[in-house]
Amino acid sequence: MTTADATRVIRCPNCGRKNRVPAVASGSSRCGNCHKPLPWIADALDDTFAGVAEDADLPVIVDMWATWCGPCRMVSPVLEELAAERAGEVKLVKVDVDRAPRLSSRFSVQAVPTLMILDHGEVIARQAGAAPVAVLRRWFDDAMTQRRRARKSARAGEGGGEP
Image 1 (spheres, rainbow, N blue to C red):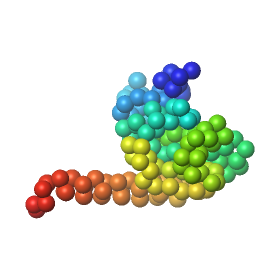
Image 2: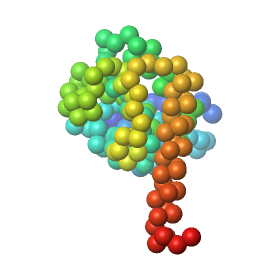
Image 3: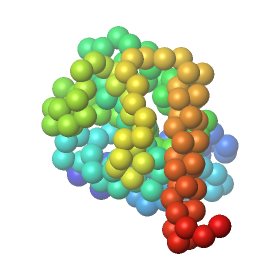
Image 4: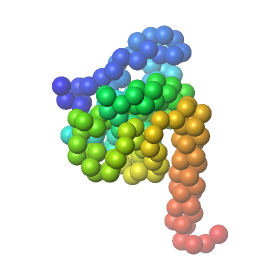
């Protein structure tokens, strides 16, 4: 199965309808029935990461994890909860480091879980280790605040330097 064919079935938290959510698509995932945002969770490997994560329109939380890792198994539902809370605002991409050695090397993953936030392929925040949902929520919100400030500053700079 190619990345373009990979889907997850997500039950809409609003109306309960099951939806097929593709790993790769533009925009954000929405319920086919009520049109509310859906949590967007996808898997990626070395050969699919660019399409799944780097080309995403939304900010992406990347979970570098391993099947044998206890803390990884603890943080996975926490990340899924965060993805559900921030449906339409973020995409969660899970990368099994044992099946994606080039990505592990590229991002210098020394411990799992390693979490990153990507904005159009650029790492804007990084955290090693598992954390409770409140900590991860604050980490994500802080990264999004910094992202907005950087974009606002860049737009102000495009005006030719005049007030």
